[in-house]
Figure 1 (cartoon, rainbow, N blue to C red):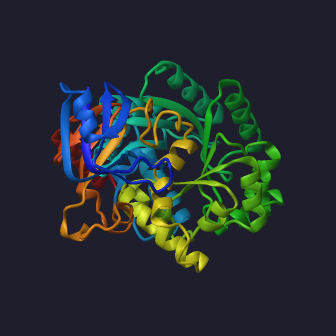
Figure 2: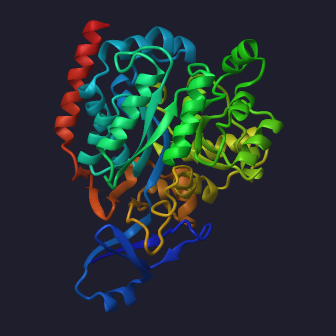
Figure 3: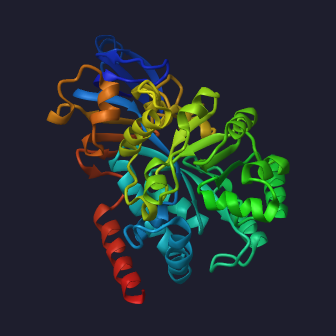
Length: 435
């Protein structure tokens, strides 16, 4: 048994709740009780106590769209439009270097960054799925592993059939692992055919799998779809039967009122990536309008190659500020709602809200503590406001995943930080030499 006793406890559910001088009691991986600290000490006199006198305790943040292994390409090709960035820089470099070792090392580096920044779960999309799973399991990190599916060949697979076979093989290999699960991730409407989408839909239905896809990221994507198919991408996907509550649609930057209504009708989940959308000049998504329509909106960082940071604290703040400006409404996306986007909304998007995303009895103890004693977060009238608008990821002091403390006082307890950084430097030297 462990008593975790913060100054402010933010359970996320109910909305905007802050409990003062309460404690969370955990037993192995689960939350077993939430009660006033004085009562907890009486009820559990032999429990280990972690006292967090100036801290907020909240659920671990959840990143619903990222490409973890691409942390090894951070800063490799900056200040470019999406298609130029992909075709002329990223895809050729991936073709030359992506392997089990590249993916394991890059994913571990990303996990190291995420844990230190308060992220305890991520929805990934990449190749070499088994290497992603091994990196997550060895680091004690919770991961949804999106198995990329494309029509064209890469060193990983020769065609869509090959990508799908490898996805199903990796899923079978790690069946029963508590920290990882697999989703099917057709890359985007412009890289996947109708027949492949239909096969993915059938498999997802048969195996009860989640779906993960880039959709409506740029105006060019929409223009090219109109030219090739005669309809916008979302209309095409709806006709195929791809839209549903098991889908995480990454980006969704360019949407009409009709399309927002279509997303709401089908229960599609949105992974909003504000920093990446800005850096690639993709645009600003209509997040406030989506939420008003009842759409579940979560937050992603995208990969470090297109964002340079895998930092959900930065993304929460940016998401809230952009929504206010885009909607011309200062009340759009208040702080508590931005925090929900990075926690319970994200858990719902990943179909994990019965396990994580809020601090509730019976859920997994995926928790983080944030020290609000710094000058930048004082005085503290409202800890939720401070977390979204003022706090920095460097103020994360503790992280627990499934009840295991994986980060404390700047030290990683579930992975070898020094070796992870050394491997990243070796990849930098190799990629730079061969560029």
